[in-house]
View 1 (cartoon, rainbow, N blue to C red):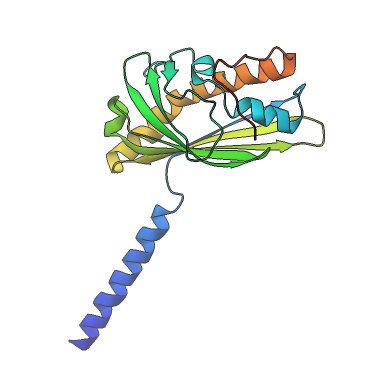
View 2 (tube, rainbow, N blue to C red):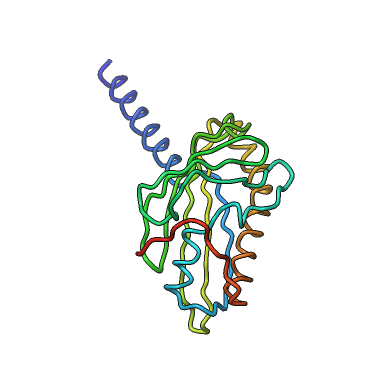
Amino acid sequence: MRSLTVLILIFMTINTAQAQKRKKNNYPSVVVPVDIKSRLSLKESFEYIVPMDLEHIFNKPHKLIPSIDSTSNQEAWFYPGMHRVVHFTDGSTSQEELLSITPSSGFTYKVTGFTSSLRRLIKQINGSWTFVEREDGHIHIEWTYEFLPRNFIARFLVKNIVIKQIKVPMRNALQIMKEELESGQLYQYERRVGTW
């Protein structure tokens, strides 16, 4: 009886460890990179991109992904802890919270509260941006979305459908910012932009 109890405890410990290992960084994600030869410094480029109006860069729908109509924030997006509601052109919304900012090198945020059909698939999206100045003078930017699916079936659909569709608007958004930073024809924010 004692050896059976020990075997059960060992089995439970192994299963728990495997489940925790699977949980860590085992979510579907998409990484979209861009290299920009910006007319601005790394610091200025970073400060230009972080508070970017979403309706400016997500201005085209793609298949099941609508464009963005507006956001609820009255101030530019640049303080950790800031929240905003994102309004899509199909009438749906999501909520974003800015989690961290490391000046000139990166920022993170999360997207939750989907009212579209994504609410059945995704609990949360973790977004992160990293900025690195390369030796050739280009700024290398990586934008990552990590999807936290609701279940195994949702994970399959996110990995095989959603990621492919979201990649196109992400690339378009980065291309808009790349063109502006390289040409020097910068988008003029309507919201008040604060200081870092």
